[in-house]
Image (tube, each protein chain N blue to C red):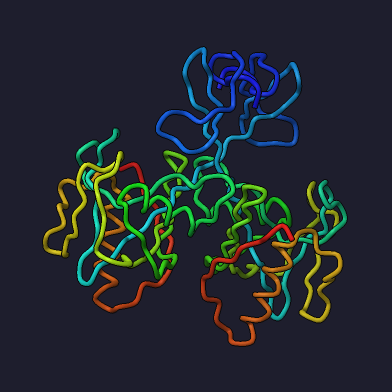
Length: 177
Length: 177
């Protein structure tokens, strides 16, 4: 951030009075511009014994495999956001959507909330964001071609919990190294 | 948002190509400024059969009662954020911190994640944000003086679940009316 989004004048990074952290402050109009983590919401779409992965057709990590997920938008609920992202990236409708894994990713100021879900029917298609969609059983997962560590961790936990048939909500942290 | 925070030129609200929602777009440098919901994290601090509430010493809702909670900061985990806010607003350390209730509040582009927790010891004090701290048992809760609907809903669910001694994670939605 270089300029105040309210008045257009330059901002400075400084610790305001009664605060402990550096913030972008506009000395012209006085506004303090707080910056906060963003939440990504997504689904693990199940069909029978398989789950649906998307091959990314956009950067970063183009051509790698991922689960459908994206930024929560203003005005929507987390569940609606996860369902919307799944539709946008896979063309598939999901049901039985339940909160499952929350990941802190503090080094990139992100959170991921992944939902357990089932495909309504085994219908999906290529989209502007995904060049290929495929149902994988556990043995077929392309572990060396998963786009992001958070998706790898989601899949690992999912297959672990699937052995018991229970998917208790939990929080995990993704670290840089 | 009136000006581009990158280059300082005016922005326009428009739907970018390949998008479905209006965004603030800078025609000078081309940056699209996405705006996303913010996450508030907080605790329900228990001590024996009581819970700790704070009387707000800041606007909005000055002098009303609330649970300790505030915006998650960049670079911190949700649990650390909830513990930090509790310390900042009550002077109290908490332990046994477990995720409990997630509230969608789409009409104000906020989410609240409230944790179940216990005071380490019954020690707390007035802070710059709280003019009074008090342990309440269920019969003493000042229901007509609770600052926010999300806090009222948190307390209602907590006292309901306390009858069973189990606090399963769940998502609720706060609506405008």
